[in-house]
Image (cartoon, rainbow, N blue to C red; front, side, top):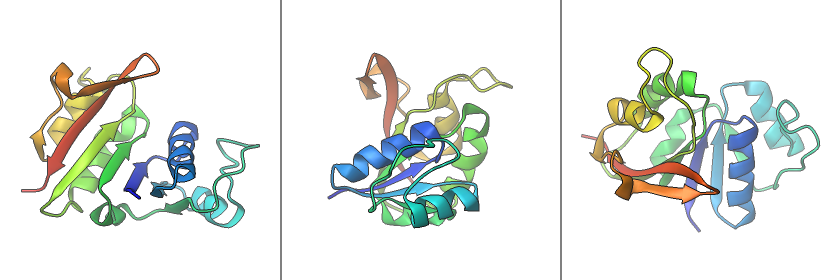
Length: 152
């Protein structure tokens, strides 16, 4: 069983977290909204983004980014306009060990026109930045960043 933190509890992040949880992994999903977390934890639903979907009862939501200390994989599934700010907050919680990182956030940063992989490389302390195609994996026809980050 792999310990995974999905950062972002919108429709995409919740769906990924739920699928990973159904596969038997220990999955925590981070949400900015306390109401979304309460809905996931109490009702096993994310009524705001996935109205009629019953979520796996093992899926747990938190408003605390500090849970990244306890996971092996970090999956970024936040809207592109918030990824830099959230990544910097995550960075403050990283311990001196390896984390596997996957970004499923699409788009460009509005101010800089940087790709999400570049924003994460700027915001997190990386050993391997994932800025070459060797560190991308293809899923459903889309390229997603795969990198390994470690705190200083």
